[in-house]
Figure 1 (cartoon, rainbow over the protein chains, first blue to last red):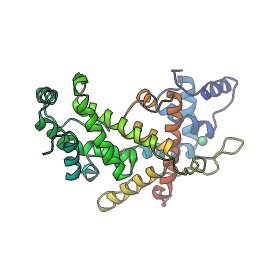
Figure 2: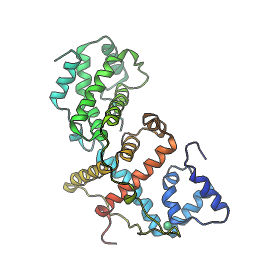
Figure 3: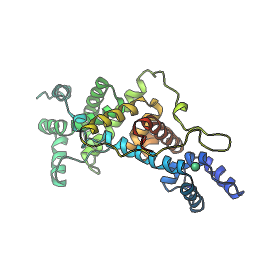
Figure 4: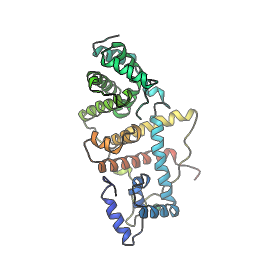
Length: 102
Length: 203
Ligand SMILES: [Zn+2]
């Protein structure tokens, strides 16, 4: 485990080593670690196995990924140029406050 | 996301930096005009409030030019300004009266004792194109703005401004583990807010 991984990973891994199964709650809790490839390979394989069998978790993972992508697209300056329009008064105010009015 | 520099080449970049360090008013004006819009977009994403955003950008430029001698040119001017702008915004965010925050719990998935979800997740339809796109993006930005501050700021810094976990933790004076947990919860809560809009009704 890399530094900064939430301590719950230890509990999950211990439970899996005891023969416990990955459930939907685990998938939800550790989804980001899974996407960031921070789960150890053994745990990761069992995650993926759960995803092939559980349509709800499969859908959850996909829509979670879409959420991140949609948020990025909705805020991307290139796609939304009006979000980065500089009011002329602000340019003037900044230059004035530098003591170098245009 | 950290803006690409509008300055075309490295040679232009170092020439511009030299003029800034020499106190050339034309260089200051060029930077404010060329990069101001991007910095304002950053501030709007973090602070939402328009007046606060404009004030933060002003703070950022004043602080940047005042400290231009300390800038060593080991990153692009735009990257350096981006960092200063994020800092200026966070300083304002800390000063702001904390608003009554909705609890995040209602937006997180819930599970039974056996670990099964209370509500099964459905797939989403493809995001719209054309005329509907601008409206959809507006509603996504509104959903982000609804997230409790504590979570929204992490989502904006990590997913939108593309800072890494360590940078975000340092700026927010918290641990990397806390940043990861907050980012994950923020994404889950945003997913929940968007679910009714994007849920594929044909399924
Ligand atoms: Zn499942």
